[in-house]
Length: 388
Ligand SMILES: [Zn+2]
Ligand SMILES: [Zn+2]
Image (tube, rainbow, N blue to C red; front, side, top):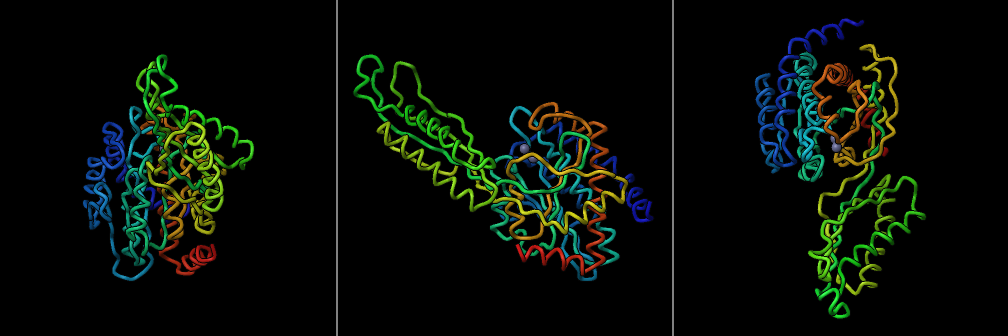
């Protein structure tokens, strides 16, 4: 094994007890999106201990932070993105505890090499990935404008590191149908049934599924469906996520879904209101050159096989990838667990997770070192980004 890998491993071992402590603390204190005050403070505490300049409430987002360390010599700005929001009832069922800790760890370890080669290392705390996706607002506020490289590694079920591929562009739509109440048995003809609007919406969307791309996703729930069975509901609401491979395909799908809603309102005689109930996400464009550097780094630390990710979904990291070269690969928990479950959360504090985390952190840092050392690598990564 190369000298630098051994040196890195030694450095990682020295800080591991602090990483484990932080990960356990986050596991024990799960916080929902935009309420991650404890998580923000604990990350900032650790990073400032290791010499980072820390700014809380970064870009006007209360639970966001920026931690940066600037070398004496000029060079690239490499950012590791941390997440730390949890899920209601389930806790860290998406593993954002260990995701965030990995990014802070990579930042702390790369700092030594910024001293040698120059440049800057940033750890950016990005809240509410599961809901409002603060990266979107932060991107609009310029958080990633001067970043040369963005890396974030998400935990996943199974025994393999997975390549960063793409994520779906996504729109979160709330459909509110408004009608008129009436006694459902005594005078149904005087009522306008808002629930009919919602049910027709589901039926028309179900019919639409035959004519959409296999990569499109439309899925929803009814959040309000009436008060009592003997009252014609005057208000019914459904929340949907609409997803496609990219913005262009999403726009085509959205138009069809909106037509389904309009048809549902027309046939039920209800008034329709549509709004975004959460932030919309762009698709993730993986920088292949950057992914290759990360993959080679994994191989240098002894990982033999890396696989493609087969899962689909959306992430606010997508918006970052439209501003700077970005990768969002996956580290294994070395356990088969379903994402967004309590079992997944539990496995993020087990030995398998720490094995996956160590491998990911070492590869994240090795990638950083290569980029700090060689401007040509940065140039080639950026060239691919500009072309896209
Ligand atoms: Zn999740
Ligand atoms: Zn997640």
